[in-house]
Image (tube, rainbow, N blue to C red):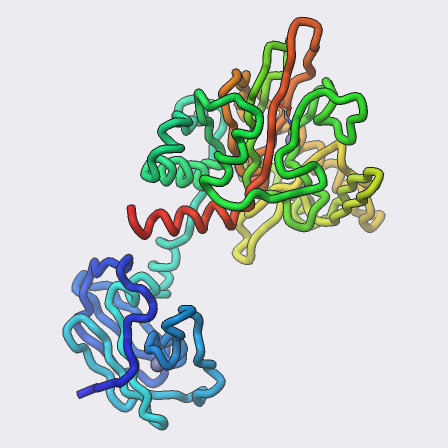
Length: 392
Ligand code: OGA
Ligand code: ZN
Ligand code: ZN
């Protein structure tokens, strides 16, 4: 029988539903096999189990941060006893006699079998024009501001499709700050906390002119491009100025399948992005298509008007330009472009590290055009979703 003076519930298990129950354990040489009631088999290494002991000696009940360090246990750590007690897995460790007790819902949701890891992998909902015209996530501003359940629905859609539109928002300047705060902190930049997108006599970027803006991500000049971009339409009765959005992940996927060498070039050769102003000089060097450790596309970095001179080995110059031209040509194809004309009260929110945005040139003879914008990092979006999911 295992007893322990330390408490077990420090990890906050309430949101780990017990969807399946463990039925049998097999004590192996360096890991424990757990057979579940649906036939699924998990393998948990002893090192991993010891490292994840949730007791209050190992994890602070105050901060929920780990106190224990795995290098303080031997690499060859083994259990003296391991048993199922009810639905819990209980282990008495050889050596120091430490005791650990694992919640079944927590264990199942952290199973690292190939199958479980694949099922946990987030997949973006990639779109082209037809797909997004049929299913653009649209929400009413007032509903989202009032109801956390709608806020959560909106944020999940935004995470998965990388784009959304809120309708009928208050058009008082500054309202955007309150919307962004429904998620979390606004990311401040040299353009301000909220920035006004309108034609300015002393424009320090193409966005603040009446010129056409080709498809781009904002701030590719930064080590971390802002995650979410908000564009809040306050006035738009100028001629022109329509918005165009393209899912960069869709373009990258198409390139990978149809133009593999161009894909390899854009995901490996660095580009230089510059933005200079009187008191700032931002530069970043990195590839246009960013891959994660598994080779999946995690980010697009792209703005024709913010590039510095190409700086790659001579035998890669033509290869780069070929790939760069292919990418731009694809983004110009109508089948990938979602075009939309913002009306006052519309609030367009998209993942700036994925979705490229553009606007047509506009003419101010017939009316005004005024948007306010801001950024919120991806971390803030994901954190808000997780916190809302605790209670909804
Ligand atoms: C921007 C931008 C789009 C627009 O400010 O970064 O792309 O529609 N603006 O004016
Ligand atoms: Zn412990
Ligand atoms: Zn922009």
